[in-house]
Amino acid sequence: MDRSSVGTARAGGPRWHAVLHRWPSLLGLAVAVPQLVLGADHESVAIVVGVATLCYLGAAAFDRPWVAWAGIPGGSLVIAVSKITGLAWWAGLGIAAVALVLVGLLGRAPRPAFTAQVGALIGYGGLAVATLAVAPRAGLVLAGLLLASHAVWDLVHYRRNQVVPRSLAEFCMLLDVPLGLGVVVLAFLD
Image (cartoon, rainbow, N blue to C red; front, top):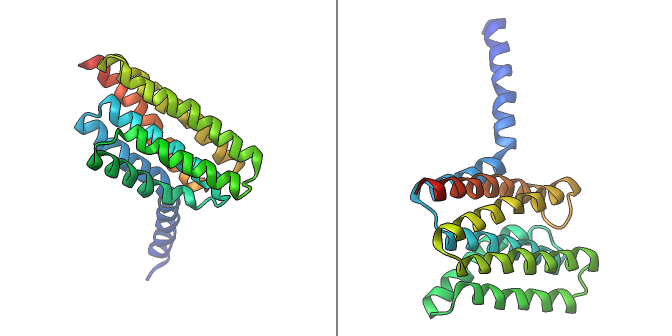
């Protein structure tokens, strides 16, 4: 192997490392893009907001950042069970949220982080459910803007490296902004 091929191999290595280091961003985009292509409606966007807030609340209630990642399949399971049993998805998430609040209170979760997540659940989750009462196009715009604004919450947690893992906050930002703003654009193109 000559010197030029060794230099090329080394130069290619760090680029792949940088790409692999950004796996949460790539995963967020990989989740957002198909939803946009398939035409997300305001209910599906509201569900994303609801599950996101549940993930953060779970991590704060258990005082374990990794629980936020477990909250994604957990929240999806709550949605599926709710739909199968005929319960509104938001009611299922509400029941799960009450259970997490009880876990946080009984387990003595750190109050500042826990209180902030309960407030975020009430604010973001309440507004997400409220978008269901609005006409479909307006609801899609409102749900999209709400989801995109949740990226600010993600950024705060990413920078502070608290409550949830940075990888989850990064994933959420790259899901929330493209999907949220993308559905706003789609609402005006319809």
